[in-house]
Image (tube, rainbow, N blue to C red; front, side, top):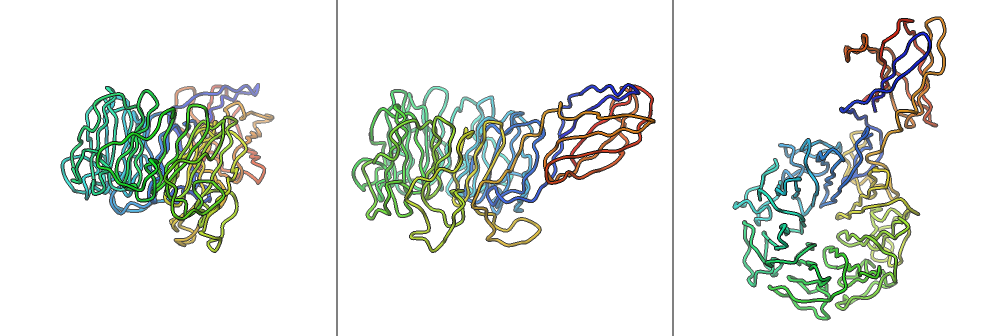
Length: 470
């Protein structure tokens, strides 16, 4: 966070905005391998995707950030090095993200589709089967929605057409064959508005609320009352508002706000109070009303109610539900009872293989689950948090910086900042910025109170700034 203050002998100050920002690191777990928390300084998080051991997020300036395991280049930073520090991959224009099994997709505001990472089955759709550690443009324009599965990808164009690429051994591409493809192939010509990709199956939603599916149905994840697999789309049901897919289970949010689920229930992810075997192939009601948003992790389920509360159920062996309770020896290492994680303020959630991220209504990003030991302080690949912790926090408003007193060239500046953080106070020459001169550095205490005591010139028209220190 950077705040500007104009100081003269009358102790007058003026806040000045600044487009750039700096972030500092604070020891917390979480992100995908969970990230060490950092302050976003004015740029809230607008889109998220939790993948297989990696996380993507977009900030309000359109920048794309990533962190996590990077063995196949899925972070898109030009390396194959893992990182628990969020890195900016694209500086602007990104609107949506999707994270699959070791690969990533994102959309820019001109409708172009980009990808990076694992590509052995053609899931990036670039005409090759080569992995890439930098973003590569797949489609130049007109893409409006994306989904990343285990080894296949789906996207929707502006005209409502549905396209697919990648592995197709179970018919998950829906083209009537079992042949994989490394180039996008049109599956449906029009009227598709939403898409979801599971482990080896796919669902899509049409403008009239119909849900269709294709691919593996061995666990009943296609919701058609059978355990059959299909290589072409089959009709499932109607009256649906949103869809979400895990590895082997499906969530359906109906237009009346009720939530239904089908598929594998070995970890209780269907929320019916059981660990069902065999799996359930006909959707059962999980919640009767007031659900507004849904997401599925690999073996767990999440939903947001109309009061902003976040709920979860399913696998919880490493804290991915965030309910404060983790026991790998618990039956099936999960819970079959719906758990309220937060009472309110949640606007979006995304589940990965064993971590979860969500956005609050202040634009902050939070997470829970496994860390994979990428914290430099411990190196333990099994660190995790079983309660939500911050990844990106939104700083206090500029008006929380003020000059308390000035006398004989001395001033005390009190700043109510984030607890246990480090801030610096710098001085500039005159009104023209910057030419900053570092003055002093202070740490906040546990309550978040920061007090600067410094020598100030009585000369007017100096500008001062408070900034966080990396």
